[in-house]
Image (cartoon, rainbow, N blue to C red; front, side):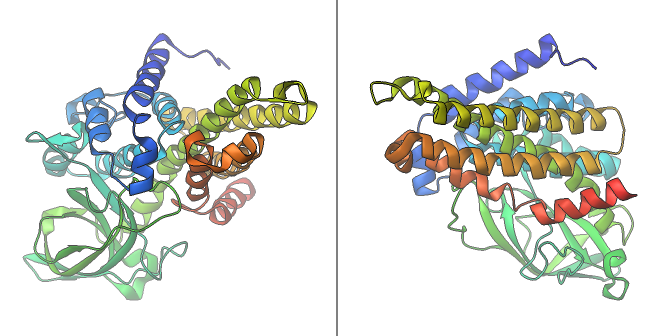
Length: 384
């Protein structure tokens, strides 16, 4: 095994770090407070080639490996998880799904601008529409339906908890074409937000990642061209599960970054804050907290790298990505809570950032598959 990052990896890591410090950090508290979507930051990500990192250059992407993706997400998430989740969804769920399963025409029309993050000088990103009011962890219980009208499909239903929901130009929508078949009756469609009958609900007022764009999306008699179906009818659930496996590497990397950011702030604070006549890092109670933080973060990073390595080598990464997500998300929640404790009263105010990181950490245990669902996936994988 080789744990040494390449020069290219180090260059990407530095570029992501510099972007996070110079572009994300200024105003991050205000964006969180006012729930401001980080449009300027996402446009800069597009300019860096980070909105389609793993897409082949022939489809407008940067052609990077998944390790590079993990490194970039960690650096950005240390400072601004609202920005990093926009990047994660566009890369892992939207671009990857289209590149893996889209037709030539679909790639030309949708994947190329999505991978570039821009079209005609405007921001152009995607969203992944699986969850519904009564279909969260039980993704098979889809009530959004499509009817075959011969020349087109007719789409009706509601999706919720949609990241990039209000800003995205393109939606990948899972819907029932034949409810009698259960999960085998679900199909995926490419839907444009601008089409008649598509309605974006109010932005959700969330605990964390408050800058990210989370909405419900409803469809009323939306006409979807036949050529916008991805794969055959009934392929939608498989499409969703395959896509989410890669998405979990992204969310694991986000959680890793949140934890790393909280640790770095805590280590710095511990060298500055004095108690009982010496810097608090000299007290064993604080040393133990920092030691445990560093150990959990390193374990999470290695799990992320392992899942990314398996993906890059064409192996089945379903189990490893779930392991990475469940461990990294729980490490993030634990680490950020300890970070607030280390900061004491200062940790409870916004100025010191760690309270925001703690709020941001929680969602990583929930979206793209809860920790409970990840354990089911892992158990099936190890017992197979």
